[in-house]
Amino acid sequence: MAKSRPGRPFADSVRRFEFELRSDIGAVEVIDRAVGALAEVMPADVWCGVLLDPSTMLDTGGQHAHGFPPEYMDRLFQIEHVEQDDVDNIRALAERAARVSLLSESTHHDLPASKYYREILEPLGLADELRVMLRDGDRVWGLLVLCRGEDSRPFDAGDTALAEAISRPASDALRRSLLLTGLDRGDLPDAPGLIMLDADLRVRSLSDTARHWVGHLQESGSATDRTCPYAVQALATRARTATPGTPVRSRAPIGSGRWLTLHAWTVDQGGEPATAVSIAPAEARDLTAIVLDVYGLSVRERQITQHVLRGRSTNEIARRLHLSPYTVQDHLKSVFDKAGVRSRRELTANLFFRHYFPQLADPPLSTDGRLINGVDG
Image (cartoon, rainbow, N blue to C red):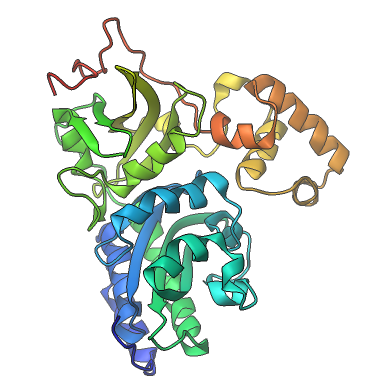
């Protein structure tokens, strides 16, 4: 791996970065410029920027051209989005006051205590990872990741200060790009497209409509002809841990200011496991960060459920909502009953990600009229 050179004073770099952040640039360009500005001043051996759904914190795109090798992504998604228990997990970082985190410091310099280090960084010869949360209050819009190898200069206080300085204008620009840009009024198809993935999450078939919408995902450097974008792969990874046939969902911004809704669910095709992913423009009801009305939750139950989905404990929820822990537990029991789950883990895995889902006809067709087995796609 390349040697990293010492960081130079970064005030000019931050000012230049802020100047370049025009209001009309897309989300992936904000991510690209932010991680590029950091890598220019504080070189890294692996770096990437990730767009996150602020409600689910699932990956929805980003810049991965200099990121982790594709063969590591499945396990990375398992650790990040399914197990959610490592020290610098996205959801843990979202609860911290600091926007910047070093894995070495989070583990108190006991890196092997982190399975993310043991299973992802160490096999790649990487010695440490710096994460930068791009957030506005409680809403997390993205994540910048920079890693250095064993032969590179360790991250220092100057690096974390630069990352902190970059994070604020980057967060503001990312929020603007996702929320304040104009809607595309062009004549676009409204039906979902269908992607079929094999057991290794490689593309088995791709309908024409899906190809159209995949082309709008704000992600670069991740997909090839036989691999799907990481936004799709992250969701499919989550779907494989859900109850068979139960869809999970995520939302992804597209450059026109619109959002896509993605659903993924597992299927059995001739005895072989597969994952189906539908992708379509999001409807207005998809863009809320509340539990679906179909479960009939009260306002208080919705508030508590949102906190649970963010990984907060009963005592934390009680403190934030000025309730007793016993009252929180009573509300949670009601939520579990209405959602048909038995635990927080089931609630997180199934409740929020379950969505109004296009019903498949018989014979099985996607809603854009193409056969699920991809013969016509």
